[in-house]
Image (cartoon, rainbow, N blue to C red; front, side, top):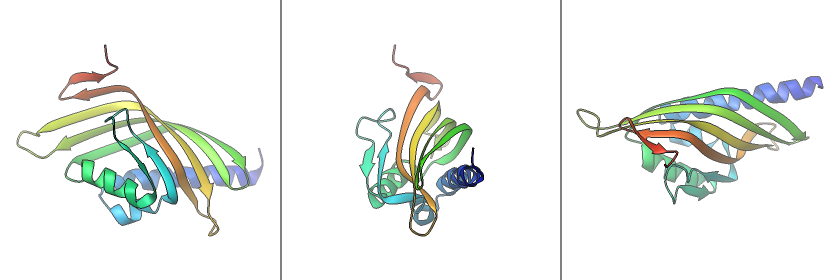
Length: 150
């Protein structure tokens, strides 16, 4: 593997770290900047209509869905492949926990699965997420299994 590929892989890991931190701290404008302007998001494993095209639509969808929740997202064991001078793809094992407002919480969501992503290097040299598809292996609402469906 060439040294520049290792640098690109590290840059993509840093990008995904920012994705998680900015999502969990609800810094929506900055979070949107981890995506390309024309990015595609598919989280239909969570809800049938949970997909969006374009950075602004992605931010609107996700901030509307989890903006009031306390969230913790983790990404693990990235498999990143550089596919061209300005393109890459990756798979991340993930786990998240979301607590929606209430006392006790109105809903606690705990999920595991994988992010399947494509990345693009922009003219400014920064890597961004071009497409993101979340595939759930397990999803629980208040401790009851929602996925996989039996």
